Length: 143
Ligand SMILES: Cc1cc2nc3c(=O)[nH]c(=O)nc-3n(C[C@H](O)[C@H](O)[C@H](O)COP(=O)(O)O)c2cc1C
Image (tube, rainbow, N blue to C red; front, side, top):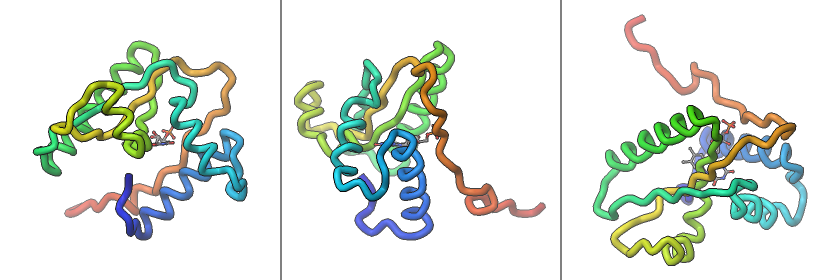
């Protein structure tokens, strides 16, 4: 799902976001069953009734992977316009063989991610994960 050697600051941000998200869902960092519980929640699409699966033709390169991200962002915004919420989940790639068998995708295609889709659960805790400060991620040149 991620580079084998994910380094700082990416690993730190990833860990912090995961800790926030899964704590809000009742899974503490020191829970010995944490990995299994996280996999279970993800595999249930966090309770959403629908999961979209996005594939790319295996011959595509980095530019087209970027295109796919932009495409999915647009899908997610259009879902909001319909009153729906969504959650991209790269975790589905861990089960890519099963997913491909289920949806009938052949080897020409590579699974990018799943996107769970559903209506927001009323009363669920608000768990918007933190974001790195813009000064860490953007360089303004010439201002
Ligand atoms: C391409 C992509 C894949 C992701 N995969 C997962 C995933 O497998 N499991 C997960 O819990 N969050 C995953 N996330 C993060 C969540 O979907 C979500 O974007 C993040 O928690 C921020 O949510 P918030 O805006 O509600 O704070 C992924 C995000 C992106 C953009």
